[in-house]
Image (tube, rainbow, N blue to C red):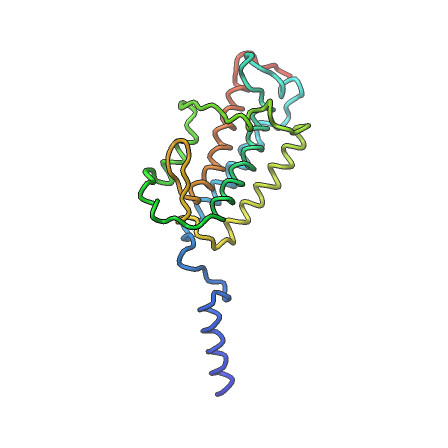
Length: 207
């Protein structure tokens, strides 16, 4: 009887303290995690597909002086992945500011669609323009992208951080850190589309 009572007390303590694997009230819902993970995994695969089988000539093809090559597009994807993640980490280290949630004017799904929408053009910040990115080869950029993306997927699977109540101001408006996480995936999709546009162009070399 004593053993059974002790066991119940221990189980209760584990649940209360979160050691039984439960997620605290400030964490994301299962649906939010599923959506974010699906987006991260899908856009990861999509970003690597256009590179497969391309020659050096094709990777470096430039349709016009101001246009990016396929390789430059991918350099931008990989470098921005790290930059946005650093921004997210910085925001999460700052005090939560739930009072700013009222400033958020866009739903998660609509925000993702806006980021992916290539009809709305935007100038990349100087540090993330290809000329300022320090990768020495496509292989280096791909390895960096893969490592970072796997870490970001792992984070969403296990983190109990309060992403919703850390709100940040971006040039286009206010978003919470969950949406900033979604932005990483949506941004890679945006420039995956750009790679596909280069490849589909009439002047793209056959080999």
